[in-house]
Image (cartoon, rainbow, N blue to C red; front, side, top):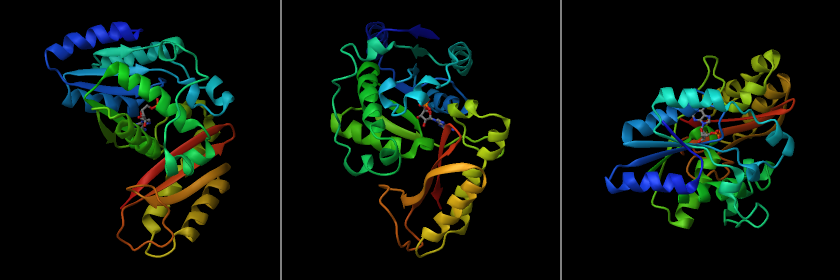
Length: 281
Ligand code: AMP
């Protein structure tokens, strides 16, 4: 694995590869890697000659400064895991490399409805930050295929919107959520849970599984209230439990029993905010 820290070095390497016509797969991350991240590397390796992974904890997407401060950093372990997984290039830029003119006058992106609901509503500015960093990274990496997790369902939609808006040639491939054996979605933030919280945390996937299993045609609101209560009973402070159209996340107030849906949740266990979602059916 080659470790590169500057966009200029990355470009030099990728230009050499481009001349051979090799396809490039890209997996952007914020580090503190787990098997969910590694499943994206594996998907990229299967379909591309070269796999680039980036690790960059993007300051502009943290609406809560405490969350940024406490975001886990395990770079040495990450390097070992990426090397073992057969990653070709690790791009490890500094904040200055990504934002050479600072972070105060970055462009704003037209995200419309997506920015006003769910994560957009509860984390103001978060998706603008995601677009700012992804715009920079996609320009620098110039990949053919981009691998991102369905775990961040709304983020995948936002990034697809960015790709359309900026007319990047890259193809976004959303990948399934990897889970611990008890069902908890793997997440870097799980490292911040203590032993008791870790046991409580499984309630998120249990509540979503309950919604998925019990949903019937009609108004899903009572089921969502039941799921919220399950989370509260397990010590969570709930931001939302919601159901939306799987295609565009628009609200569903009366399900016809057929339309593909996604059920999503975000909730705090003390200081740690967890999110998850499941497709229906
Ligand atoms: P992050 O480092 O949290 O920004 O995540 C980097 C990428 O890994 C994003 O595309 C995430 O959606 C994806 N990811 C995070 N958790 C999982 C998981 N449990 N399974 C699959 N992909 C994941």
